[in-house]
Length: 267
Image (tube, rainbow, N blue to C red; front, top):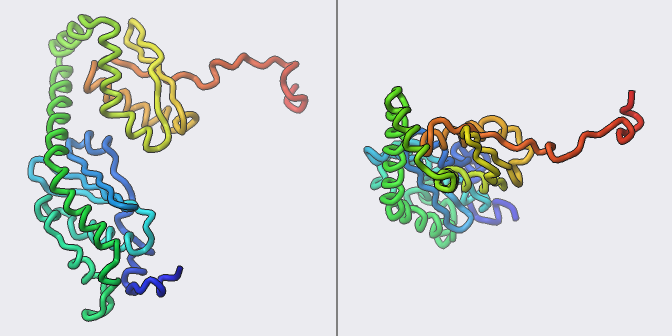
């Protein structure tokens, strides 16, 4: 179906071809910065808002959609409008304001009045104010917990206290705390990309051995930034001296001898 047959403005087509705010914001990023993250979905449109919970100000916006040029243009324009606005201000925006901005001429609509995309976006906007209080509460709690752990582990006394507390737990209790942390901060993000992880063992010297699954297997980030983030979250939220070691995916394969090697590879 062509853009002309959809009865949309040239401006919608132009914005849809070069959107500025297409993308995603992950919970990892928000937690690291002490910010709240709202990710809301309506139909085939999802919008991400990263918010300063101290002043309820929207600092960053992104969107993702499979919904075609109309959803893309509406979402991109909405994201542009709410940059640096408060949650209260953003939740009061009417989709008709956005439609006006996308007109080629003041008296010609940019898209049909009954376009379902307008209705879906308005529903999504209403959800912002409904969802934010709980997201703000979580963000402040996460920030407080991270600050507390960092403060405690900055000094020798703090580390000694953390050591005593950690060593007082049973092995099963330690694994439970680790699993709770992974569930809260890690698994959802990995699963969004088709991956996951499994805890294999926790050694006496606090080496956490893990096995990646799905898309994480063989992914370069799994041995780099993702691994660093997993270890950082565990150190901040569970125990400062945990070291994470991913399983070698080829460790279970027996070594090949010369007889088993292809003829072209033998010396």
